[in-house]
Structures are given as structure tokens and as C-alpha cells.
Length: 270
Ligand SMILES: NC(=O)c1ccc[n+]([C@@H]2O[C@H](COP(=O)([O-])OP(=O)(O)OC[C@H]3O[C@@H](n4cnc5c(N)ncnc54)[C@H](O)[C@@H]3O)[C@@H](O)[C@H]2O)c1
Image (cartoon, rainbow, N blue to C red; front, side):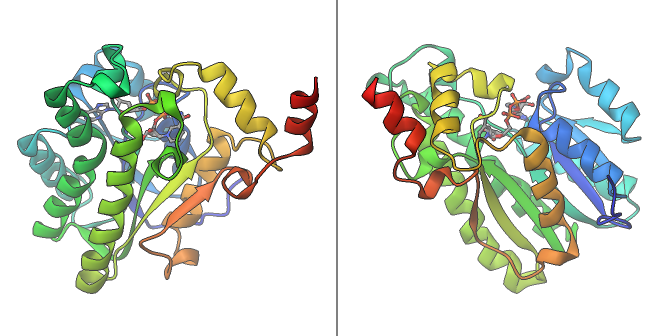
């Protein structure tokens, strides 16, 4: 299915690790819709070599970039400007990493230096990328930036741990920078709050299986898949959503506004 919604547009996709990654699937959909792409991920994530398969599929170069490293981000944006022969139109920020979750630390006992690293990679990286783009005048007028988030930023999901705080910060950066980039160059910045999805990052959440089936039962439309998320991102990069900015957009089959469902009531009555 292609409507060439992104014909003539150029964009950077962060975070395609393997074929389950939301970024991977979004890259394919953007390519099918006519976009020209540049892919990037942390050098350590590239050692698996998987991203080269995607690069071939979507005819895109791959530029390594650890988003917590300012020099890497500068270099990435310079390379993108060179590759695209000027500015570009969209960015997908699909990055998340919790050091304390990896180390098995409970939320009430997190290590603060590790927490800094988590917030730097998962949240402030959006600021670093946007600030670098603004400085280099890299995003074209009416460009669009999307970062992926989760509803644990608004409501408590105990096992989401410090990533809940990271997502709250990410959403705030999108809002605040969305103001400045809007005034500066009509660039829009939004977060998409996605249903739980079976990916490497998703499965890192403790009790993920229970979590995903609970969300499925609590969503009138069921959980949104990575493919659905990719389609939604395409619309947000397209010219059909030009006046949408500074929003946290729930893409979750209705989960966020559902108090209870019949399916959950029946489960409780068992
Ligand atoms: N899977 C879910 O259930 C779910 C739900 C809502 C939101 N999200 C969000 O979607 C985004 C994508 O995650 P995913 O589920 O596709 O998992 P994923 O593991 O495929 O993607 C996470 C990516 O972050 C990258 N990354 C980590 N540290 C980095 C660094 N220092 N520099 C550059 N990149 C780095 C990883 O290499 C990986 O490609 C994340 O922001 C995640 O929090 C996921």
C-alpha cells in the first residue's frame, strides 16, 4: 500500500535495531511512501550488522551515532546535510535505554549516575538532536519530528521503573522545543505514545507478557501494532498534519481513555 505521502521528503530514522524495532518498520513504510532516508543507531547496536539489511532495503546510508555523545550528533547532522545535499524534512527518535533496568535495580533503589545516563540517552538526546539541527539550520520549514513514548509518563506502571520519568522528560522536551522550533522555522515536534509492542526494548520490561495481554484486554481496538505505529508516523511526517505540534498523541487502541472493559470485568469475576 503506497500513497506517496512522503514523496520528495527526506528524513533521519534513529533506533532500528532489528526487524521488530518500531524504527525498522517505520523506515520501510516511509521508504514505500516515497521518502529518502538516512539510518542511524549507536555504534554498539550496529555490531550485530542487522541494520545493513534494512539499509539495503530502503537504499539508505547508515551513520553511527551514540546520541549521548555531542560530537557524534554533530557529525551525524553534518553527514545528513551532505548526503541530502541540504536540509531534511523529518526525524524519527525511536530510542530508549534504562541502565538501572538492565542492572536489575528496583525503582526505589536506583543508582543516580546510571539514572543520569538513562535520562541522557532516552530523553535529553531529543534536545541534543534538535539543538544541533537548529544550530546548523538542518530541518526544512514545516519539517516534522516524532519521538516515541509510553503512557507510564502519565500513569504508574510499577515495573516501567525509571523509564517512566525518562518518558515524562522526553514529552516535556518535545513540548518545550516544539514551541521554539515552531516559532523559529515552523518545525513541528510531537510524541507518539504507543501500545506495548514486542521488541527488544519492550521485552526488557519486567512481566512484559502479562503487561501486553492486560493492555490488549483494556483497549477497545486492541493493542496497536508496530506496523500501525509506522503508518501513524508516516501521517505525522506528511503534509496532512502540518498544524499538529507540541502534542503527546496516544496511539494505543483507546487504552488511555478506557476505565475498564467487559473483558477485564469477566477476567476479575473468574
Ligand atoms: N516496545 C514497546 O512496548 C514500546 C511502547 C511504547 C514506546 N516505545 C518506545 O519506542 C522506541 C523504540 O523502541 P522499540 O520498542 O522499537 O525497541 P528497540 O530496542 O528496537 O529500539 C530501541 C533503540 O534505541 C537504541 N539506542 C539505545 N541506546 C542508544 C544510544 N546511546 N544512541 C543511539 N541509539 C540508542 C537501540 O540501539 C535501539 O535501536 C523507544 O523510545 C521505546 O521506549 C516502545
